[in-house]
Image (cartoon, rainbow, N blue to C red; front, side):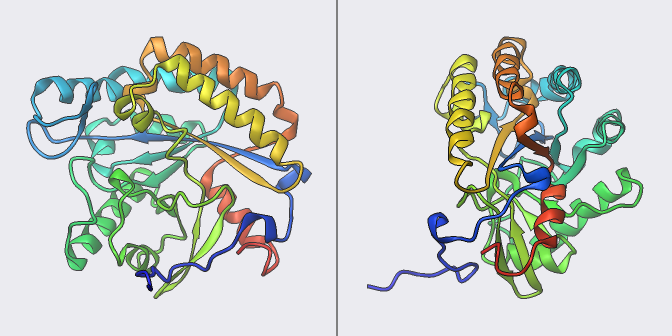
Length: 296
């Protein structure tokens, strides 16, 4: 039986790859990636505090809006306290709706990453022309909020891609994506406009599926972070690894979840000197500078 292939990358077992190091000779890279989202009122898609929202009334809308009004600022305060950089997957509509957000992120030196127009919609159900328009609109709005500099990275709403998303992203000037959680190292993917880097992005250490879908507590999520870090730090003695922690301000920005997150991050930072703490775009730049053949 022959299964339907994707033809975007070849199989590569991590044990068989050449080894390399991150900048400074480090073996474990750490990235915090935050999702800043905006939603239709009373229509479209979106989660609730108890799971996928079947009815889009005022309650799930307001719960998510807490992230842009309060939760994001709680989270940025924590990142400032711990001197941690971050990448931010931004719905383009949120930057127009909440004018304080982009300047605050850019003042930290953080990275704006394309994340569609709104998480009230998915791109994998659109026609190719409609999806192209979505990508270009999102790119251009982020560029307008970033001094004319277009984003280089992309995460689709709901981590969803169509059969041609990689092609459309490359044609629109994007150089990496976060939508393929297939590895603990970056790897090159094929598109009809050239290669695209897959940067690791966790669907496990991701507060939305962990807490909204699987109903983990904030403290259980913090334990997941520390267990993942301790194990990956040991594994990185043999090969370079990437650990990502995925956040949403309306989830992790809640004070009762922020406190155990602070403890988990402090645990990690006890090893700060052994880590390359970076952002996705910086990882792309470093990987692109490595000799051909090191990265599968």
